Length: 431
Image (cartoon, rainbow, N blue to C red):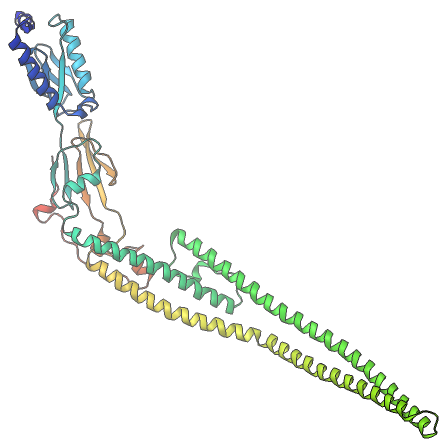
């Protein structure tokens, strides 16, 4: 105990002050900023120093029980505490034992346990832990997907093209189903009428197709109703023209009788010739009006025949248009399916035909036992975690039930997958 009291009185000399200042600067520089908030765990290394007492400076390792050995205080709990909390605990114990009443203790985090990553990764092994590190970042620091990395850019473009073709293919199949439903005068379109639809796309495509089917039916009915109304209007015009024709014929007959009467009177010398000529002129005008009415009736009759023909041909023309639309859709569907098979084949050659996510298993020591935990690429890591990355079988061209290629009717051929344990780059890394 006399050693510590003697060391505490060394502050009077200039050399001691300079030494202490250099020592404090070095300690502050060596201690990472993350130590202020990091919870200490077993296996990590701490650096402890006491201001103006270099004899107490030392590096300690947190043992498996979560404690550190710091003479003359003995075992001090450290696991689950931050560096400042450990420093405060040491200061309190030094004061409690009357070793140093005003000790200035600094605790720095020298090293935490590394993260170990293995499996289907380019460079498996240990990675220095960083605060906030995720599985995705650890994979990137370990070289990513290895041999698959050069093809990822091309795969991204091919998958985008694959999705575009699949969407266009669903649209053309919906068009074909709508045309066939109109031809069959069906009430609606069901999922069986549009093959290849999955998930949320099924409801959206079917809703749109049925909306278009209803709109087409309403338009067809409206066209037929318009033709029927046109026929009714024409029939009404013909009826009124007929009445007008009969009235005009009666006028012509009456005027002819007048002409005959005035002619007889002129022969008897009772009226001048000019009056007879005037009556003849009126008769000719009435006969001309009658001829115009008869010609107009003929024209309206032709309009009626044309409207009746349009009404009779409406259903036939609509059926012919729908059959042509269905044939065009079939041709386009065949071309799109061929393109989709080609893109899927290219993805299969790259080993990227599948759409499943990378499988990540996290091994974390809990209660002294290494426990597997399911994780994703966004999972936050802790010091000492073991990460095993495994690519799904679909990445190696093995067909999956939900594979788009099977939707197109031509599943991609399976490519034998190499044993992941073969070769040093594929062995599971262990801490």
